[in-house]
Length: 141
Image (tube, rainbow, N blue to C red; front, side):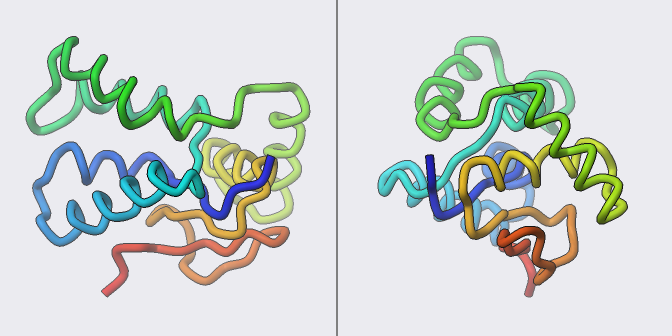
């Protein structure tokens, strides 16, 4: 499996909450392009974090029906990386080597497993390279 980019949870949160119009527009573009061209992906972790945030923590939480639609229409088409012992082992290696938090390391490990060249997130250092994956903050001004 090889896709161009991995999209982290914060991109979906900006799309859903729409509290920052500029970031919401950027998120829309990344997500829509990723789905249409099949060049982007996410992992189980992104789905879990996104659903939890959207129904419990968002400024305007989604109802169950809205969340189901979002899950089927937006998250499911991008879902490629499932949990595995190998993924957890890789995340521990990345955590130790780069001094990332465990969940950030798990996202990076998922991007590596998917063969991505870019990881869109604002949670890590923009421009950093991790085993062939470039960290890109799509919201950087």
